[in-house]
Image (tube, rainbow, N blue to C red; front, side, top):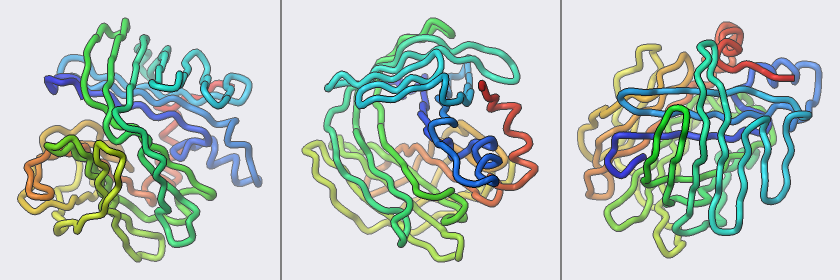
Length: 287
């Protein structure tokens, strides 16, 4: 998010894309190579120019090393102090370009990782809960700086094997620390929650989450909720899809008024045959 709140950006690099219908269809025939299903998802949010791209690419278009990840014409490079993403992507079904460079400089690196399920088949951890971002795009033209967050998810099985739905949120606190809430419901309908705070000195602590506030469903009727000690306001709806929503929320956490980056995922919606048949229109594949 830019310092003035006028611009926003979400970027996800996938190896074995969790949202990929192609990966799901390939798994039906047995084990598959996740490196054959890579994608770079880029979403730009501004009042005048929203753009979204996610083209999946096969192994012959991608490569990975300890410091570089190439996904077709785009790549990510870690130089030891910052992550530089060179983006050259095209949206679908309407072809619009996103081209330029994004640089993320962590304020503090974390080696923290935790299991999201009892079987420890799904894991998550922030790499840089607080970071500086510099965006320099030529298409569309954008040049801005702001605050960023960088994390990682990994799994040993398809997401639908373990989960039913979840809500996730990230809030930047006044002292520069970052609070993260992971509210999860599993396939057997049991539930758990992670409430963690990451400070500027590299320390991780837990906190008691406030009660859950149920929010109005999205236009696609995706259910959602968030933990807050005060009424919640939906400040901006960033994404609204048949299985996933992303929004900015104004709420209260740990005694502070916060603006939270919030996401909800419905696994039954994601894996439905109808939704998976729709996804290639937005997520083309290059063999």
